[in-house]
Image (cartoon, rainbow, N blue to C red; front, side, top):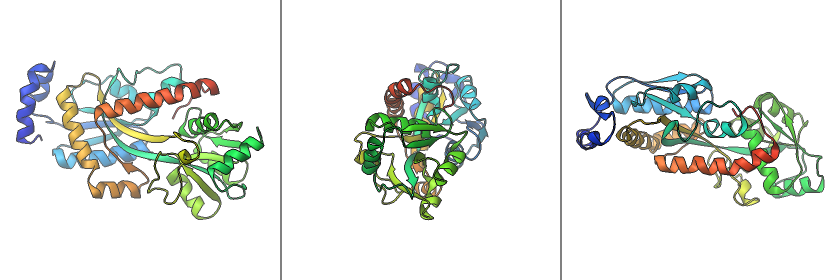
Length: 320
């Protein structure tokens, strides 16, 4: 429930928000909140559960995680804008329209951003047998052997695919895309030396780096990360390179602004708690937080960064 001070403040702005009287008539929230998200087991699901557990405790109302896969986006976009349906989702929300023809949502018009919640950088990895020790050496090898190096990627438009195409564009290197039906088969091919590089989730490849079968050449965040201690950034070799899987929380468009502000404050406060940050790191993600405006700006920047990459590479379909 809202603290008294927040309730008084919200009452002062109710008359300025269309439909807000119905939302706050008995205080918000006064019933369980549904948080729709992607399939069980992925980063969006993990993030949704971290946020839902914390909000349930702080609000005194149950926040229920509802795993719906890609249809979660459509469900949230058509839900009543009353604060009782939220969406926890990642970059497919705003990047899928670049690679798919039949997207039914507009990421900037159909949703009200609340906050970024977690970030997960990828790792640029290679088989231990590949004779390079750094991103710089990989770029040099690719340029010396144009068209001879292959990279593995999951579905078209996935982060493993987009990350490699952005790398190719910024490095000016001719590296051949070898598609697989998912990141699992792509990783198997990499370990088996069938391909020479891959951009993969940190948690997915860390065990293979520890075993010595793979080597981590660079992390795709702009700054080094605790998730991959000692690994330099790809940006140290290709300034400005960035590819971070961000999971964020949204409400349907036209959700009253006081609800958005209240949820932003509650979720960001939760994500900044040391024990939550530590728990997130143990699960392979970094807990972050942002204002709605910062999240909107980040979405727009990522769309701008990948629009030309997608067009030049002719990427269609996929996007998960």
